[in-house]
Image (cartoon, rainbow, N blue to C red):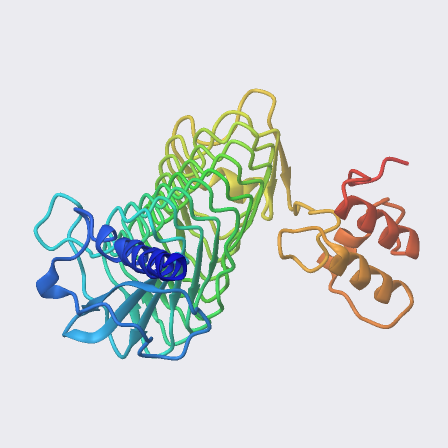
Length: 392
């Protein structure tokens, strides 16, 4: 009799455990989950090949034609987007056509698989716990508001064939530390990275010919940036309130610097302006600029259409026929690293040629030549053990 009771107790325990294990599937469908009519039944096996073996919490469609693009959300927090073609565009949280992922706290990682061609409007709006995004190389566009208010987003791997980043696509991604733009990128929309307060370094590839209004507004941690050599104007507030930005080199493709482009950049001390610039609008810069390096003559500078309060304060010095030297940044990627040190060393031992501008950047002790000592100084600077240029 005692053995029978033990067996019954074990059976009852197993049934209770099985019942409890099933609860999260239903619990996952909170008020922000897609309606049952738009979501397929929860499956026990994935419909595509992934390494994630955790249980599927939700599945459904998010394509422009419905099931041409589908998704699976796993218990791990991984959201897989797969299929072929274009994702649907969604309304923000107050609209009728709300994304199935809107304000979904379960999503931690998004993996957009090969075959998907774009990322729809508002699709990940308010995914506050989203930290990592990986985008397949078939994706060519990120539509407006795609990742707006993803405050926890830290890392994103973009498609190598991405061409377009839309309006406010990453607005308010306050923990996004860095982003590597591919050489295929052509357009960065208005407010695209507005209020991305953790960004420290931005390199805009030469493929970009359209850099939008307020694209990097209030990126308050941004220290270094390199502009595309194919943009013709710096639009209003494009880098406004980037308080830690120290040096700016404006490429010779630019003809116009619009109103407030660098307004509020209180740390900006040195600016290089090309002779190609014909107009500098009101409040384009704050009054904190210490040195302006102008690549043309004083006569050409005086011919520029400069509006009031546009560039400099009482103590600003204008250097005519001059270039701003970014000491240590030999390869021109806006970051001083071991790569720059290696390039300087290879030049010093005659294994590599450098341009005149690169030679000036590598000569960090200003002795008129590039030696192994310069390479060592650059390496020390890359690990915060030295400040460039070296004072002799």
